[in-house]
Image (cartoon, rainbow, N blue to C red; front, side, top):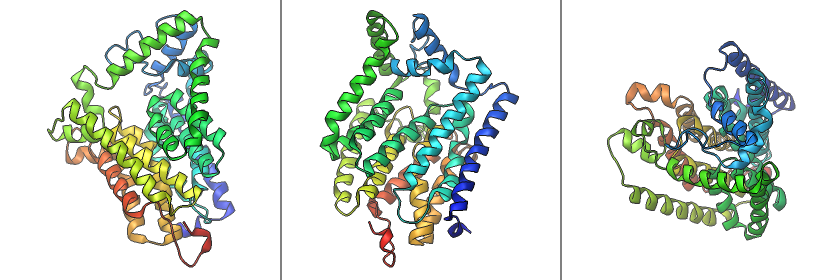
Length: 386
């Protein structure tokens, strides 16, 4: 069963599964004329940018294009393709980047091949985001690239991926800041990378226009962190969204203080755990901690966004099944993935709005990380030492 998914042929089959997943998503999109998509806002923002229009028009309530100008520039080539082609290409790129990220993350787990089992565990959590064309798939992949290069101590590559992740979505700053705090040699490299990313839009438009759009982006993102439309709160699945679903409303100051304390705890946890970990295991652990933090404390986390933390849960679940042979832990982690993948469908059967199950699973995963401190061990196999 699961313990047989470690051979070269299984790795090849895993790639076929990813390819098949992409084909199914594209066929579904073509048949339904891509009616379920979020890329309209991406397209509108990119087209507005290249035409010199107002990129953030219509985003005043925290909806629409709520990304930085570099993403508008990067999405431009896709936005200017005929809609069916652009939609299909974007989904193939997104799934491809996610698959490559899972592959690279799997190599941080130990001497046993984890990629095939991780593939089967991660894809269900990616289904909704892939169908809708959400940026989260690319973001997750790029963040995993950064973790993989951190594990190999390739500082410039790690900094480059972190800078790209932040340019795509500022939420990636959580991972960047955590890695920089743990490895100060990354600081100046990441700052250079962020400067390059920030300057990219100046190559595609006149300076005055770029500065104006940056100002609008900052204002829109300030609004997006606390939407003015009450109906939007029912879609956010962070820890405070989960509490809100049960009638518990935390003040903005309480939320901010909690996020800061959680960030400090995440850094403390990584500092505490890293002493007993190899560089690769540390990189996996840091990615897992940052991804769990993002899911629980990013005020705009949605159920579909849990595709970002799913590969980390899948890595530890696969290791528990295949390396440690800890069936209780493996089963628990697998159930967490089921809860994340079916957070809406399962959650609404118990209590609505169904934004509480995924953060509950993420909190459970965070607890697992605290208890295990990133360790994946099997004493009889030196390849699986910390």
